[in-house]
Length: 325
Image (cartoon, rainbow, N blue to C red; front, side, top):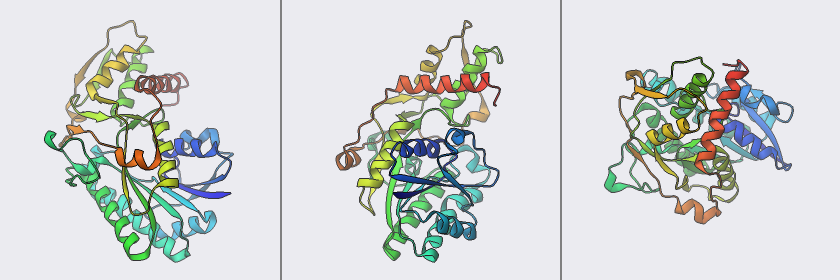
């Protein structure tokens, strides 16, 4: 039985990855958990996984985590991943995302373990790509314009350095926008769905607060994305970079209108742009080309985007009905 360690297991993607891997009995799942982390995303699988307290900014704890889990595979998903707060706390983002990765890798050197590692980075690293350079490929130049992206560029460089210096088996990925239940309301689509659910229950005026609606993205269901991560781990070539995403392309405004169309509210729902939801810098087009990954793994997304949107809205309806937020 293969032993798997997931950093960020309590988060949006990490919890869905655990669900996916648990469907295959050949994996024993360990999760890195920060002290006092919320367990709501994994409450349904607590009896099926082994959680170990630790922190990416504490190397001593990571050595302990590795000695207990002895992983064959590490899915390194733990990160500070919201873009907007990164302008207010840039050092924290660099500490967790970049130095945290160094701490994990040094802990591996200390323990002598040599697992295969999947790193999840972001297309935010490419910055605001001009229209004439779309679609983005693995060869597109990195030009980060926010502090979150800068920390992930650093993480990416660290991975390349450890692969070259110590022979680490690292598969690097940049996953384009992926959505689904359990994403926090700091995310645009989750925020829209949460507000719509509030409106449906009469808990909010029928006006949704929004930021920039013109940005255009590839969108993939999170369940398709974690399946892609698994294929990348199993079939990816260490040292290679793979962009992952679907050909479902929408503006944020189109996503908002789709969610509103799924609402049961009898009131007409309107929306307004509020200053605090507009970023200092914006990435207008994050549209990728995914031929390299698809050719290597034969992965194809299966879940239509409208179905994804319905699942997000249903999640927040249930969440509010159970008074859990």
